[in-house]
Amino acid sequence: MESSSNVERVAAIIVDAAVKVHIALGPGLLESVYQKCYVHELRKRGLSVETEVALPIHYDGESVESGLRIDMLVEGSIVVENKSVEKLHPLHEAQLLTYLRLSGRRIGFLLNWNSVLIKDGIKRMVNGY
Figure 1 (tube, one colour):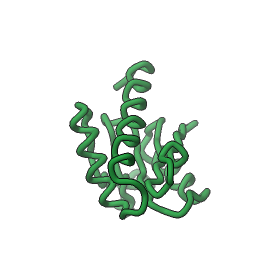
Figure 2 (figure 1 turned 120 degrees about the vertical axis):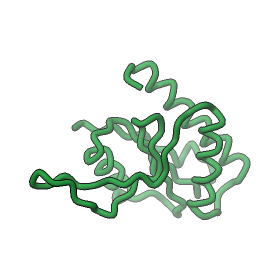
Figure 3 (figure 1 turned 60 degrees about the vertical axis):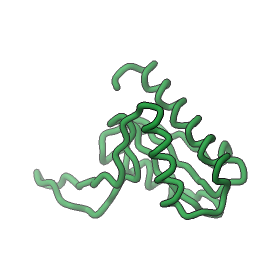
Figure 4 (figure 1 turned 135 degrees about the horizontal axis):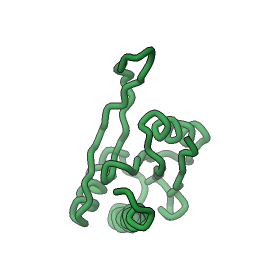
């Protein structure tokens, strides 16, 4: 997924699918429940989705297993981090930005499924490298 127009097309699908899942389930469930349903919805729409993607640290010429995991990698290039919390905090944003930087990805979404309106719980972030 290289072109800017394709990235925007996939980003629009990511947001639209989140809205559909949230309308069906509402707030208040565990993050894992939303993620399973969301992955199903994105795949149903023809997108490739990897879950719990290991994120090694590259240090001193070596790849070191860090224990870090990206919740979802959509189309091999967009990072999605799912939360089900009272409110998003700067720490959650820092986590997504770190994952973007370490993975070399540019675009990511932070989703708080516990929002009354999911549009208030979606934050798109860009890695400036």
